[in-house]
Image (cartoon, rainbow, N blue to C red; front, side, top):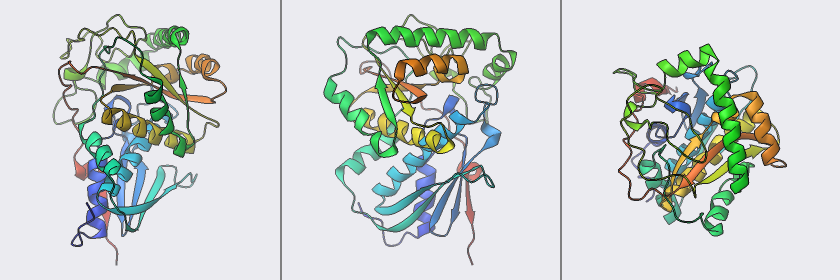
Length: 332
């Protein structure tokens, strides 16, 4: 599918920005804004959507922006548009993260179409996963290869390290339970946000606390969940950590791009997934996790991967309107 000749550069970029906003983000905060200038699409962080107690440095905010950046490249490819990606770290404009510039036509491949379909159908599944055996090595290798273009390393937790990761998660949860600022933020932000709010994790996607090998956030503390946990127990769930050699803003952005690539590839082969930020939100827990993933580098995020084929579909999360996140700058 090549880009229709009738579409202007502005039309192509607007469609890329619009569809890219299906990307995952920390607690569905959608902390991004797009700005279209001629044949360029700029990605900006939206500080008004930063979870300041959970993510005071803005690291997970920028990781989320990296995911939406990769999503945009997937949409451009299926539209038949080639583009360069410039990652930007400018102290004078700290919220400008990247710039996509159209460079000409692109021949659409079957893989482009598969990733685009995955982008449209992927969802975050917080339920324990099913399974009777670990994921095959060739599947793990495929997922790990998708992160290489972004200079992001991956670490697969072996069975003993899964327990180690769970210990780090429990330590982080204990700290966060004592943090009044965090407790206030998680009580008011992730769930039960009233219309017309179109961000946060909807109660229909929240899962009650269940027995699993690697605990995840209780995104609806004290709330009646809308999604049953199902029969899974996470026994054969794969836990994948993303790590970078350095810990800069550009590394955070690249981590988000790698996250998007892994989640979309996982979707194309029928795997369920969910990103987990709990063990990197608290500095002490992140330091503990770094010991486990060394020499991969600085841990940025972990992901659960598994099978939930027979489980009911997860309700789609709401998204902010295009008017909120996309600005078209007139050119003279």
